[in-house]
Length: 65
Image 1 (tube, helix red, strand yellow):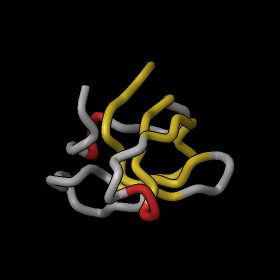
Image 2: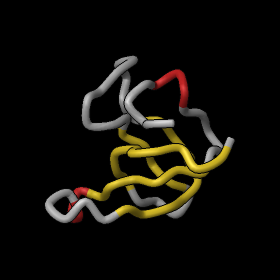
Image 3: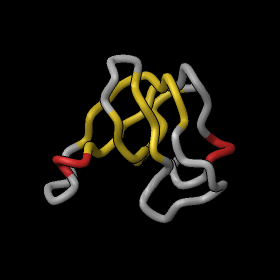
């Protein structure tokens, strides 16, 4: 599943995100969603989330539910 739709993401999901610093390379970082930061229902570059370790990035794919 991709991370472009807000309703497919919830707290506790394991996701792969792209951090702001990694946007040029597209390097993925795996973590567990703590907060959903994007208010809109859809974002073409991925819904912005905060991971439990505090890192923030745009969700690229959902790893597990």
